[in-house]
Image (cartoon, rainbow, N blue to C red; front, side, top):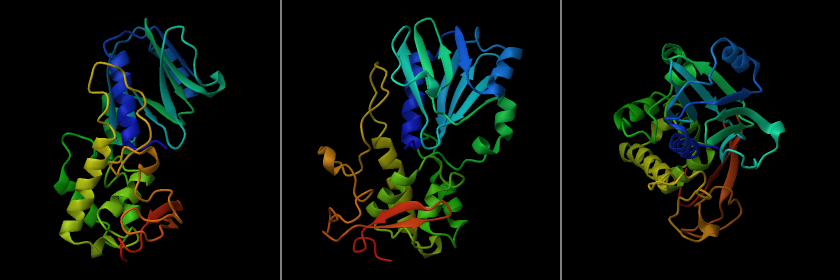
Length: 276
């Protein structure tokens, strides 16, 4: 399930593999992208930068062209050496970017569109994002103010609102609330200042810990399952997510689960550690 950490790692790996190289091949299954490529070919352009903004992945090409993709629930980018066999069937291919040495393939990526710098600034999906949890320029004051604008809404729903905070998904939502002792169904208006600071600080800490790999020269495309507990035991990676019916790792109380929000996303919490 791609969240901000997944997109950040994907962008970092794609940047390491492709930045500074000229595109030799471009293929796509999406008619709007193919039409744009016919009019102004991608091949021959240089890939200047690959970055993440929340859950959006942006590939910048020379000549003021930007490919924006969103993975939603099932999309992914793969990186291969030229001639290497793909790990997914070609029927799942949506975009191919080839250079002299490497091939990047977007599998089952459901949202993809071209932008210029100007149109991207007007595109609400990116321009309307709240502070990016993984950004070095993260503005905690702005993030807190955006949270408080949703005073009558439940904490778990607001944490998923990308216009409030960019990058948090369903796994981190439950884990952040647990770490701060905040019941996910409480209203934002009920939060104390220290609890807001905890939610924001923990969000930064948890996502940063899950993108820490890859500091060396190698291209890191996958680092294993998410971890929030700090445990090296793969069976004890998370505090509450997907652990309904199991004992809380802190107090032994049974973890609960309930659907939340208009999207009926699953929320997990400990009723003792996170009192309502």
